Image 1: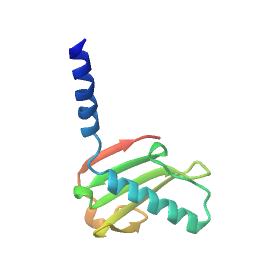
Image 2: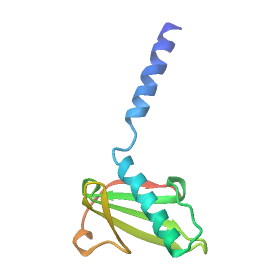
Image 3: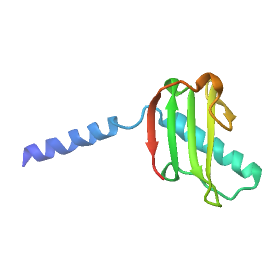
Length: 108
């Protein structure tokens, strides 16, 4: 029984450590895309659960794909231009087209 009580906290620590190292970048991109959609008048509230997310170049590019209110797939790529600063692109910038995905999360 003691082993069970020791194993449970260790399992929790292990699972916590398995979170994405790109969580801050992903959360920021979701927030920025929600702001972009609000500026366009779109009534969509994106979350991680409703989006596919791909990270390139150690967080230098974060791609988000989601379905709009009409059910059509939308794509945006955010390029890191400074500390916590991102520029939005409607598609993958030419200089990033051949980059390898370092992280992917497909939720929709």
